[in-house]
Image (tube, rainbow, N blue to C red; front, side):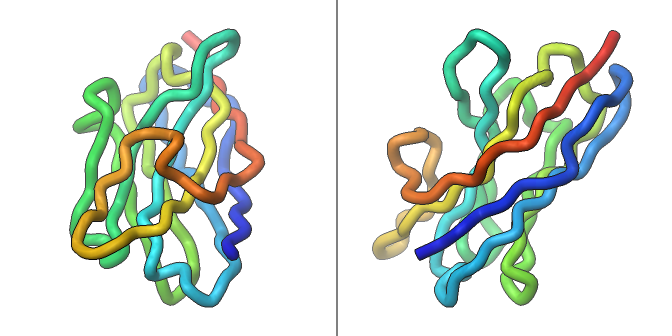
Amino acid sequence: QVQLVESGGGLVQAGGSLRLSCAASGRTFSSYTMGWFRQPPGKEREFVATIGWSGGSTGYAGSVKGRFTISRDNAKNSVYLQMNSLKPEDTAIYYCAAARTYGSSWYRGQAYEYDYWGQGTQVTVSS
């Protein structure tokens, strides 16, 4: 079992930066692929980024590639999302998620592939 709690959201000017954190509880955190998703107001939840158990493999949605960086610190049971060059269209509730992995497959880019979810943290980018 994994419990996830996001933090670090807030209001920021366009072009600014935020760093989101996700604190996880559970003895097997390092065995999970981790991901970030977001849900803009009135829209469907969408994929943002994913990271494999070792931290060496990452994947991003095209809309955030080059601006956002996902990372993890297994010793601290934490995953992070560094968001730079923020745009108004990045405004959303951001969710941290954990997915069980099997064998050598680590990439998880669909919401249904994740088993545990945090409560979300609001990010608002003003123009």
